[in-house]
Image (cartoon, rainbow, N blue to C red; front, side, top):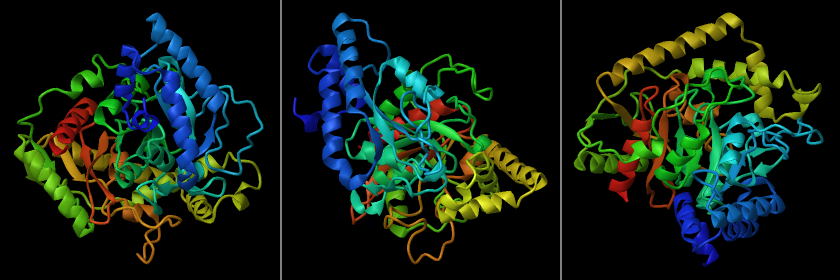
Length: 459
């Protein structure tokens, strides 16, 4: 089979090929490794690639298919892992020069452990800004990660390496973190699917200092692949005492249920976001098609004001708590923007932190009431498309921080709700635009089902 054809296949396509004997995990893994070797020099999506280990895993998977004893749902499928998750045998440097790579790396995070148990092929680790602190992906350690659609543009962040890898065909799927939009932002910018599940649905270890803002989730080119990954990633792990109990169904099984007649709301701007006119036009068109296809849409804003101040306080204190555990002298080594966030976090009191948490709680109550009327909320994922790489904010925008251009994403980290971004079109310049679908807490299956239906309607 042609390598280009292989790297354009979804995870489901690959498993179908393995099962029929038309394709082997070794062929697929080699095709992905070759694509990384050819394309990643321009994109910089990977901070570590391990061909020898990946091919060894692929050969074991190939034998399992030959013997009829596969390990899991996506046995033999190549996957990349954001360099925030501990991964046994590989250093986890988190985009920072302050983490010593010369230490024993013997622990898998829950996500890495579940993917490994399923038989997936680990091809490498993807780039992240230092400690995943911002919504673009560049760091003093790994440099700038670029958008494969247009390499002069940012891939977004902080899971920008994962999004760029999937969009460029450097593996069908990846995993990322999302503390303020870090899965959904790069998914929108790069034109892939990115899902932030309900907080606690995917176990995390070590515990994130960003606390209830922090989520782990799947990134792929289709909703179906995303649902399958969530089925694997959401299995329990005792190391996360905040994780939710096991589900009694499968996300892939619920994904194709009939959602016609379900009432959803559409907010163009949450009542306060300035949206690029071309982005608004593309999202409006997609929402109209969803409505015409049998999912009635009502225009409605949730009714809250921008919680920027509270979010930035929660974010800064989380960053300061994490960085406080770094080696002495790290304050001078971290990048300047992160140093400012660290200093801001140090300046806040416990009382101020709890006041910000109260803002988040009230936001959750507001959204709970909203969802008692509207099953789901649709919004643009981003108010803009990808801008010039190497900048934390759009050049000449006058903005001072990344949350000021990601207003559609971080409120739903504060509420801990499930939210997905799916691609719904491109601008005249060819840059992707995403639609965000937000559901009540614990409605991950419903969010995926509507996302799958919208994907079908818009294809």
